[in-house]
Length: 293
Length: 277
Image 1 (tube, one colour):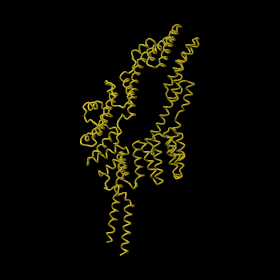
Image 2: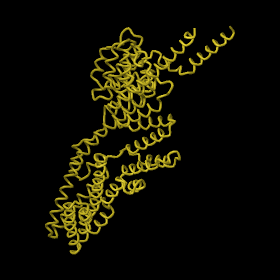
Image 3: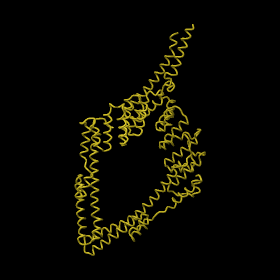
Image 4: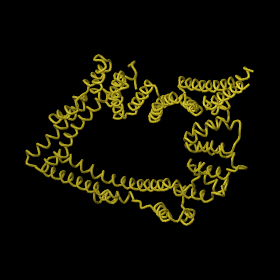
């Protein structure tokens, strides 16, 4: 009897060993034994999402959502598209969360963000003016995004106190600076530059800030003209005409170059300001709230 | 009674076998996708395998395959990351060597030649791979080919075999290349000759003509005691053409050498039957 009991205990111990040590992990990890079951797809999708492999995560969430609806998964699914820059798809997939979901406010915010980053200014303005799908909880964030778009755009700017009211005090002076430079750009006139170079070769270039080029244009034109005059005076017709051609080329080039230089100056002014504004907001993540989705 | 005792064992064994079978099927599925060149999907399935393989049985193989997928998709940085992971998780010396070679090959392809050569040196000096030194030399040669140094490449292929096909090709390519210094020097002596040397006859003759014409105008001015005129003509005309002929000689020779290198690379890409990076 005792011997029988002993052998049973031994078998039991071996069984326990088998369970805990002999690849028990297999059973644990693939408990449903189907790697493509919705639950396993969700687990795998979540791990990909954490690894920032959003495209693959989106595929897993999509398969999961075909069978089960879960607002968190739906939100993550849309956020995957947002993260990989497919903003239109992100916006489309957020719509189902706008009503009767605990994530509706966040979904609406992400929807606005998608339109904002998609640079669909027209749609953003329409939504903003009609207060459509408007997340009241993040009212100030949407206002900021609208102000940023106005600053990016070339349309008429409203007064700075209205435009920047939703931004923190610490950046108000910088924003006012951008506003003034955007509204009253210090452009150079192409006509003035050309006229100046007509009177004094290279003066137009100096007017547009290209001092070195201006001085060079002045001296090369002057030198060519002098050489043309000197060669004609010495009866060297060929060289006289050669330097006359050169002088005319430098003179014409100086006038044309000055007008072009003014246009380049204006384009660079605008380009640099836009770049500066973009960088300013990019560095501050467009003043968007830090939400850990 | 005895049968009853074995029932739990049989159940557990069958569950284990089934799980292992599932992972094996998953590995096969990923391999099939890889074979069909569906690299994106193959990576997904290898990653799924890695996620569910908590026993880490397929760890090294799956990482290696993911590396191959990324390499096929020309994502060399990601490929190197996964080959490194495969190397870390491999026990087999042959597998470790394969991973190292793959990392070298990816470095060659992404043109980080210095890194590729550094890794070749490290692998070459590793005693575990003493018998595989020819393979390391082979990839050293390829690293030099991609760095446009056919002379060094030929030296490394010669270490494998003096009649190695790639050694002969590299030597031929190196010999066919022109000397940039020589082209510049002859252009200093006779303007336009460097361009002619690099095969641009028309440009060379045109450059020579312009130089003769500008030189005539300059010298003529000095002969007529028009010193200022002579200096201006010399600076604005003659020197401009003279410098231009030297610059052209350099530019044309570099372009010609690039053509020769590209021809060799095209041959390697389309005709060469051996292993390529």
